[in-house]
Length: 299
Image (cartoon, rainbow, N blue to C red):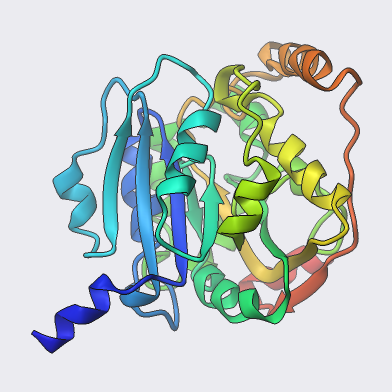
């Protein structure tokens, strides 16, 4: 019975991952958050909250729990295509002193993200730890789909590597996302995996819930900007790590370039902020190592 006590203490980190009709993608994403995949972490150090944002075909809670006792599923009933309200709600219910937000559940994490994040969170008074974004495939998925890229092709691509045993192999079959196009040391406009104090997230107001466009519109770049505009936060970029976007029919990532909702997103941003979107960026502290598979990004 003594061994059960650790599940009742407060985890260091709560990982909140938002899904919308992503059963195929969720299995890989959630697996990438298990101690069997993440290197150097113990299950008691963190919890994972898998939230369905009004999905028509929600995840099976039993299947989510099978990833470990620190995993739980939460269905958030809503008709909104934006994940902002659901994510904010789940952060409020998170038990960890720190939170990691993954606004797009279609992204597989590289295997050092949790350990690196846990190691650095206590080193700064107000840390903001974030990662690069990658797309599975040889080119951005908005363009790749015009050349036949789809879920079947992606499944075959992932079968060419043993990513479940060594997630760094994902760098071999992926390209930089548009938000990370300047590379590991260049400016970024957003991150789909970041961690910070829960109290800081709540004090900042979390994601702005006025962003109601599909996928949240500019809510994620807007949050990134607000962090970088606030002097108390110390941005920390994880070297050698990234998230890898799976093809799932996303509102912005998986539509042809001429159908991209950018104009709609920009209009909503102007209505909310009374100005055009302009990225705000501060040079971060870099933390981590560069595994061999990552070094091709260094030029």
